[in-house]
Amino acid sequence: MTNRKGSISVDTADIFPIIKKWLYSEHDIFIRELIANASDAITKRSTLGRIKNQEIPDGKISILINKDEKIIQVTDNGIGMTEEEVEKYIAKLAFSGAKDFVEKIKDSSGDNKDIIGKFGLGFFSSFMVSSRVDIDTLSMEAGAKPTKWTCTGETDYIFSESNRNEIGTTITLHINEDGEEFLDEYKLKGTIRNHCDFMPYPIFVETTKNKDDDKKEKEAPEALNDTKPLWKQDPTTLKDEDYINFYRKLFPMDQGPLFWIHLKVDHPFTLDGILYFPKLNLNRPFNESNIRLYCKQVFVSDSVKNIIPEFLSLLKGAIDSIDIPLNVSRSSLQGDPNVKKISNYIIKKVAESLKKLFSNDREKFEKIWEDIGLFTKYGIISDTKFDELMREMIIFKNSDGKYQTMTEYTTSVPENYKDKLKDKIIYFEKEKSDHSLRAQLLSEGIHCLETEEHIDPHFMQHVEMRKQGDSSYKFAAIDSEIENLLEVGNASDTDLKIKDLFKLILVGDDKKKDDKNDKDGDDFFSSNLEIEVKNIKNTTSPAYFKVDESMKRLQQMTRSMGNQNGSFPIKKTLVVNPGSELIKNAYKIWEKGENKELAKKLCLHVKDLATISSVGLEQKDRTAFVGRSQELIQELTGLI
Image (cartoon, rainbow, N blue to C red; front, top):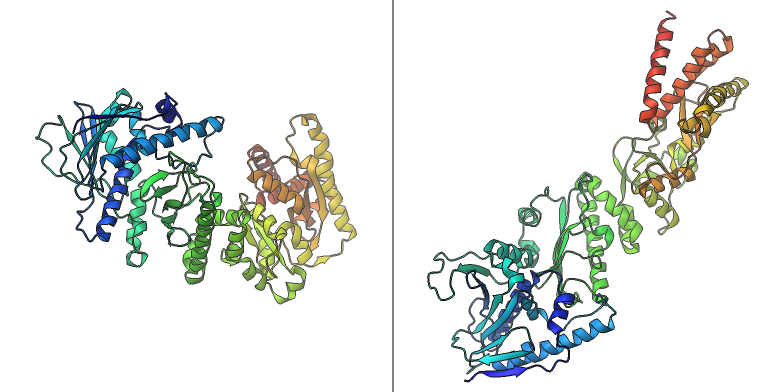
């Protein structure tokens, strides 16, 4: 056979620079594309072999690096091609696809994100790192002759004779200056592991100093990849240890996973995968690239926003599907009905797995709740279907530190308080609530549920606004609700005088004193404090703070969205208990008039104690509190 030249009729002379600019942002993609094509060729040969009842050798992909001659060869024992097929599929079809691609680029005004890409351009990524590419191939077709195709990245190519005698294809890349880094064995192996770590056929990498030198490495190289990843295996044959070891392979720097979900579906789309629930670490920056997307075991992307809803982005793992549409570079997802179906399927499987764990192993469910609670509540707020499946599985710690669902809470309310509470759930903020109030309610058999500031304000609002079935809930903070639950006596004349005393000391005098420093705005209480007197029976707490429920919710939600100081000052009410011995004694000292300074110090101390019991003292208030406390103790001990 004599050399035969050919040329593609493409109007765009600079087609390769355009492809390089728009198609791939990273040069290392070329090895993924060539290995993926080799894998497809092996699969096709295996399929045809079964149809024709032919014995087919085990598939493998071999990569040879010749650093001296700047050559990388990718060889497979797949189906191979005839000269006509090379011209049709590599030259004519692919270049035609390239032309269509260029036209799409022109029409997209610079935005190629929505270009659906079955342009057959994967092979041409090799020209990003090569000055010349040779294809040496022999088809499995009976009587086929080997052929060699050579192209330098222009629209011209040459067919020449080949002495190949093994079915399959070898692609030889003559590496240019841009691709020299891939001649380093360590670099190329790392790239292959990143993109092809779970390819279905073994990948071997060898090095040689000269392509004509027979003195290659004597030891047979080991396959770089795991040809049968865990997601492709039968879940019934796997043990917990298998899943944990696979997780460590994917995420070697992480702690072990909490639990996992094995995804496997064949209709109406194909999907395999494993999603892990990791242990939450709020001290580490959030990584949105926790889930790796594969297509036929070839790594495609770690950006799966369209497939995995945002609330599940805390999960880690891998999913593999041939039904996810990709753009020409396989690196971004396109709008397609299958994407939505797959997303809904994953949401359903996650919810079903959590429900199963809740029902079958409540102890384990509670043990991992601190790690999964945040995203579960977020999912309920974000996704209607997830909300329907999971709302009744949400748990909170109660006053005894035991977990309860909202339904379990409402059914646990003592009979004599059911009318008062109805559908209310009494809650307290974690580390920001007066323990004495919880103790008072608990003595009546009424629990409170603990909430935290990041997600619960949004979750409570969502549950209150979106009723499910016959269940409805209303959340009320303990400080605003306790006086409605417990018996409160009528205010006496002395009670009113105690109110006036606290108002005078905490609001009146302090305000005048602090007017001098009002520019600094240091004293929150002097300008935002109200005083109430409530004679709550069977309580020994001298005072506590309450905040209007709607204002509290608004501040909580503002803080959860990043404004830690809140966007506005909140009016607080100091509720004084006139039945407390401390309050009675402070009032008596004031009424005698002999040591009003001591009475004032006692009133300030009551306010400080109420602050400590709820939100705690801020740094700027601690020095004043310590000083006042020392003075008060010194004065009291001096009375002995």
